[in-house]
Image (cartoon, rainbow, N blue to C red; front, top):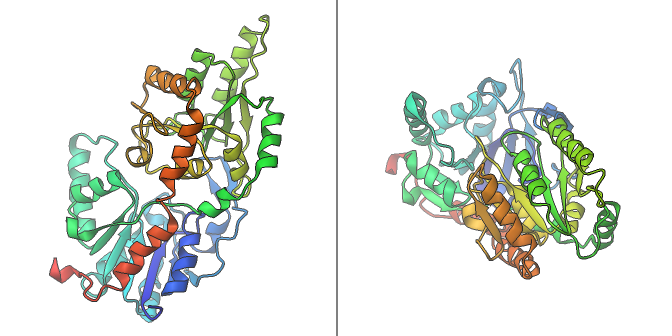
Length: 402
């Protein structure tokens, strides 16, 4: 098994893929090609509005190469941000049995597709969906372009239901689609951090019976945290607190609304101090935040929302889930009335109903347990099996046979 060679082409190290690469390295002759270059290890994230450097190891226990990137403006946010003059040469020197490309929207990644079509089996991994509605001439042009892109691909490993529909719309056949569940490193989140979680709840002023609703991520219009705040304020739920963890362009607006609310109620008997903020928390601290919480809410409105891996993290940490129907994982992971609810994107009243149902439900603890049960099947080990099984197929499909 170890003699099979797999090349993976991706832009930069991320926390969601490093554990997979480590497992693949034990089962295959692996090489990961990072096309952004070494500058990607510590980069400015415009969504968070700060330089992000993860505090868990992302480059241990698997082979990799940082390639020279000659882009004048390097980055993964635009087509010309990834230009590697020697990428093809490095892959050919490695001589893989298959090439897995993560993302297509870069000059060098498209070159890989064009160069190796019909020569080496080309695999693709991405999590795009059709949940944003394209209209007019842009829809037509996009369809032509994406069908051309995916005509180069032999196999696509889809992350879930919405992603599979996307690949089928843009030309891939059922026989070219393999399910490899979107997954996280569950082990980090299953390690008990009970004392730290209790301490966090105490710092926020929660009692043992209070319910903590969590939003964690970028404070940006796409994620729509303002809708969650508006719903929480309007409901004035008893024994419920709301915690925003992160940073971003909407941070000032969120905090201004909370301060305005406090001014309005300062003469009332109760103190309205049930909305809390924490800055961006790095990977080592996020398990504590999730374990301190009861409900995770992702009210995204898009455009551009994909899977929402924070929901995987929240579910393995025993959180009930509320998600909008723009979140790619909602159709697979959120079972209405069992472990949470899905609401129509941007529907304030719909979100209020969902929040009320969960926070006032006597079965909230059963919902939290159900989340953990559901997400256990969405594991990196099951994802790994999908890749290994295909790599070991005797007759891998190639472009000439499709």
